[in-house]
Length: 207
Image (cartoon, rainbow, N blue to C red; front, side, top):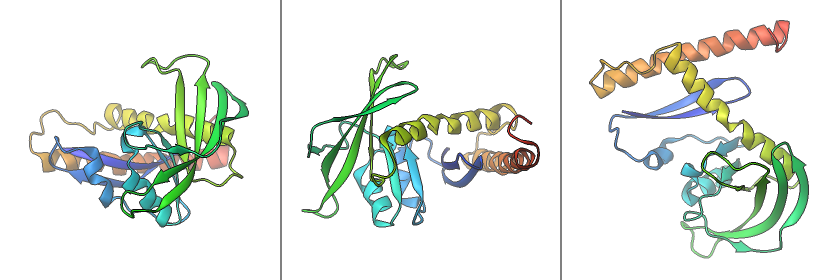
């Protein structure tokens, strides 16, 4: 099977999990099942950089910060790149761009394009990371880069589910059984996150 999880870094909780029995299904085909609420900020990897999904977030009065997928998000420059300073991993530039809405012909959205020129290339050899967001100008480009940098936490959470809570049981050959076992691990992981959150609140981050 396949699972699409919505993770909240601040609490360490998986808030939603969209489950699919067909392991060969494209993750993007599950995006329509994701609930979006006003005021949320969605930090999204480039695999989910899909205009229909991004603009559904925007129409719900929520925000997105997504790593740009070159093929899925064509744009028109509205101004040249401007230097916005440095963060821990490199130099940051920003510009306003226009992106057409594929669902509503003629509708064009003004967005922010943030380019992080890395001091050190990524494992894939990328020398820059390009982010696109509809967050307001009050949220600085540096803050956007720092927020996206924390996206890896969901990978750490899945590692915990795998190593400590055995979310993938090799002997389970039936998709529904495998997805049920995964879901029980998610619930257990949320219980562990609540416990850790209480320890942090009472005794501090180091505890």
